[in-house]
Image (cartoon, rainbow, N blue to C red):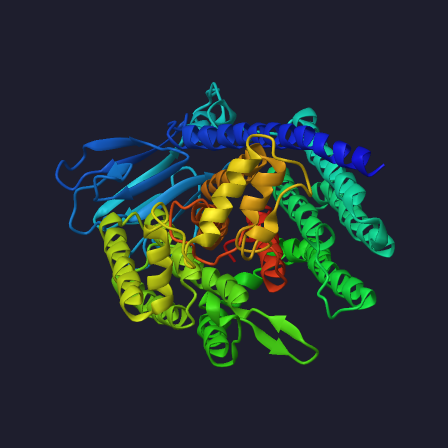
Amino acid sequence: MQSLTSYITYLARYPLAILAIILTVVLVWQSLRSLLNRFKQHTTPAHGFFLMSQTAVAGDFVESYSLFHTTAIGSSRSSDIRLNSKSIARRHALIYLHDGKWFVRPADSNVNLYVNDRKVNNPRRIKNQDLIRMGDRTMVFVDERDSAELSGYEFEGSIADWQYDKIVEQPLRTGFSWLLVSLFFLIGYIAVFLIIPSDFGRLRIIYLLLLGFFFVFAQIYYYVLPLTFENFDRAIYTAFIFIAALGLIIQARFAFVDRIKPLDWSNAEFIRYIRNDFIVQAGVAIIGLAILPIVILIVQRTRFLEKIYYASLILTPLLYLATLILGRGAAEWGASLWITLPGGISLQLTEFAKITYLIVLANFFKIRPPLKTQLLFAGWAGFNFILIMLLPDLGSMMILLPVTLIVFSVMTSEYLKTAGILVGGTLIFFVAYKLLSYVQNRLYGWLTLWTETNAYNEQIIFGLQAIGRGGIFGRGLGVGNPRSIPLASSDMVFSVICEEMGILVGLAIILCFIITWLRGASAAAKVRDGFTSSLILALATYFFVEAAVVIAGTTGLIPLTGATLPLIAKGGSSVIAKWLMIGMLIGLCCRNEEGAYK
């Protein structure tokens, strides 16, 4: 019977790998097509809409300018409409279309912009014949549809002739992707159940109930949440449920399979420890899924995130300071990030500090801020990075710094300053290398990866060996040897997945985070609220960068950082924080922009 069970779980590796790669390829194709079409929309001139400007030099001579879905006006060469005037800022104003209506807003907080002689500080709707004044230029917004109607003519064509048609995910394709996720979960669910030792009989029931509960609620959410929240992004939801399901399956394998009982423990103590260990891991995933609709509702229907900006500004360094003072952890791994609460509960405040950091980042760069504001943010962020370095938690710094660079460069288009920040970040890492032995050890282990095996690189070496043993389809759930890899269930979980489920499943994980970024970039390009756009970009980029840093460290492309794979690696605070971020991301993508400018 045992041999039959092992053979079934061995065969399960094939459908698991095939389902995972087909699912992610389909979602990547849909997400990439959506993003490319949105870019195409932004480069197509609007049919029937333009600006007319009377030049200061030519007197009555009038210039006509085409409008795009989003049109940047300023004196820089990168502007869509370039106005050569000392009174015009490099990026002065943005005119854009949203929900069939045209809006104009300042591109910078320190420029003067007027519509019909009324100063504009926030996005304002414009109509036919409205006068837009910036610097010494006055421009007239022309809607040929209204002009033709006033003249008694019929205007051929409409906004729909050129406006981007939303890519509506066809039910068959969306349903197909979700079917693949469901099948993957069920096959892995059954495979782990079959390999749980028979003397863990009661634990099997706990396993069935907890993972079954997660599966049922994931199914309900997939069908109910799109009916509750307009613009609910099924692709992002599907990608994260796949990642979370994979995480639960592999963590159940760690909890129940191939466990060695300490010699001084009784069987009852051993089973109690395993039970509690798995309940915590599955419990935080279920709690995260349970609070997901609440977070989406708050983010979509309110401006709660904007309102907690000042609290986040103060709370971020306080969380790092509290961890620096009260934090405990395994000293041999370099960082002490856990705070022990009464009852033996450990809390990692740094995971929640990342959320508040991203909120502050998005608020600072919701529009292109003046130099003074940029310097204020640089000082605040630099202080937080110093605290992170003192913990030390270089993994967080390697994630937050690239996210900051990407958000800053996209929202400001100031590439020289971005290069300067990159140089500054490099100097921080150099200082960390000189001052911290932990960083020196990590770098030494990475540099000697292909010449010797030592205490500082054995994780990577053993992880690479595990990936090599797994091959394309893996060795089968429970057949690998994760005990040979230090911190296999947390830092090195990607290696174990590749060994037991195959490189194809590892590739599917990478594609899922690419999907998240593509969908986030597409949503960020669509929304017209600067804070919403900036935070969507920050969250989507965060997930992608964190996964990239972890997987690159695991496979030896960069030094190992100590960061963990989102929703897959073992963790409590980390998993809850990630579900909060997922809810924020989906909620921001669902926002109804009618009230975005109040």
